[in-house]
Image (cartoon, rainbow, N blue to C red; front, side, top):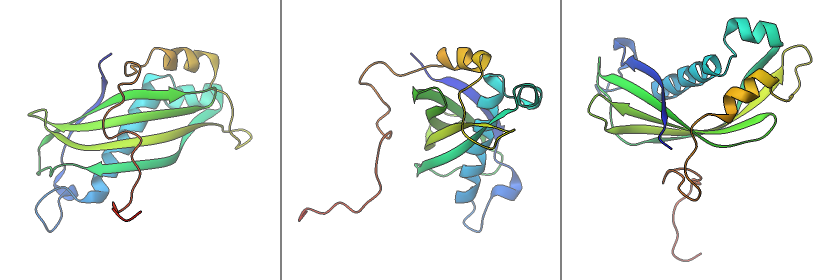
Length: 157
């Protein structure tokens, strides 16, 4: 299955740093906007969050910078659902430029939360139904950058 485009935006002038390209923190901002777009897509927009008394928190993120983005450059963020259970989503986002060049990836673990109790809870049924049809990679075909760990490769270990 192919990834789903969740977000289209452009590199804002205030996102550009002293090196003349998008600051590293702004990549995280764009992926955060993609999480918000995902929430809207699965029925957790402002109205859905209020109706279900439910939201999503980010538990963990792993961002890989692949290439530089320039001011006013178009950005597209695609989603693949790697895994999920009753209250968690393991997602993989890919950010591309207008020429379909990979700029960055973000692998994230998201947790569904009751806004009434402040505790994790199962996705509301309508939300779970939308999650069930999100695009997933074929068996054994995760994106190459998914599941990576950070570290310095050592040959003496």
